[in-house]
Image 1: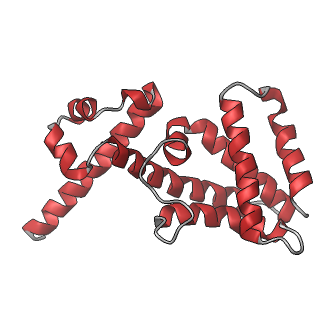
Image 2 (image 1 turned 60 degrees about the vertical axis):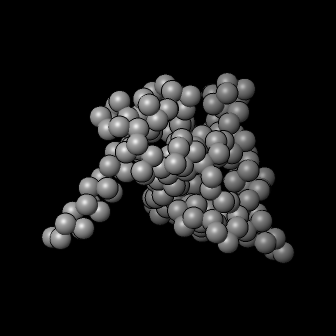
Length: 192
């Protein structure tokens, strides 16, 4: 292994450590607790080392969002792969989405609430974000209905899931009705 390859491997390892530490701190104490100073202390590197990887918190949030998007896509595909039939796939997808949002609140915030400097729904959208949307579209496109553009239907269904996730997390919706909400969403929006 060349010196350059070793340095690149070490750099990638530091970057993974920064992202993992930011994510852990955000999940424990919220994103306000994530500062370059605190991250530098936790990973035992200087702040200039952090800045050699990320220009600031915004880019760190973006890196966490991209990691989260890849994880969400895998979770959605895993949930829908075991489901039999379109209705079961859409129901599994909705539950997996809401479970991901509930189980990873700081990551979910990085993906959809905070400014990570990432482009959505554009040509320059990063691949992990495109793939997360594709994971939704794979199951939702088949239940959009005649004359309904599958991408547009996926956006509307996704927005409904986003609303459910956000309102549930904020305590605005009674938790005991979560399953019924998913069933209602599938029954009323999906053509199965």
